[in-house]
Length: 110
Length: 121
Image 1 (cartoon, one colour):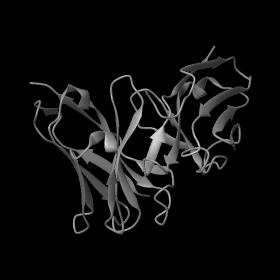
Image 2: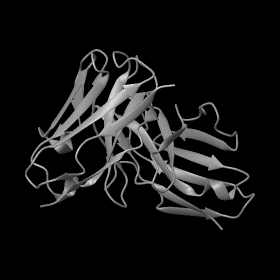
Image 3: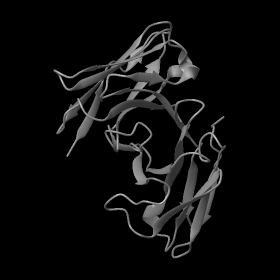
Image 4: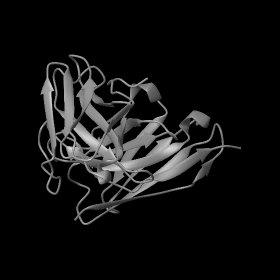
């Protein structure tokens, strides 16, 4: 049981916009930044979004992030086949004094 | 460009101790925060703990007192020891570096490729 809640799956067709949600509590998302990671099968996760809405160098601007209250979301516009991956949200948790993760969302491009 | 590489036994016996090393290249380990994260087969990510450049450490309370994380600045390596392992500790173990040296809460910016550890007799 993950501390942050994500839908287990999401899907879309090429060119569409898909949004992945991440729900938490005051002690984590409500008080701290949210980060997002992208993971392809058999590889390590890669930082996709940091401080809720900041893209690391090299991440296309098709990816965007937002946060409101105790929830956050990752949006992918202009969906492409190479976006098919698992996506994880994470945030520092003040109660734990450490980071917590969502269970991950498997994105399928139909 | 900082790179991380995990190493250690792929198989550990139940009740034994899992010991992993993360070797840091391309940057000094005396800066930033260094964490271990694991991923059980087919499951999500779990933070294990970190050691910071200030030598402070913290770990996930769910792992109780089984975790020890340490740093050897002379070798540019950091280590994970997890004692009294069970099958539930079977996972891919990743070492990571924080995005900002001054911020424990910053994202995991650099990841090693991961190493699979199986707990089995």
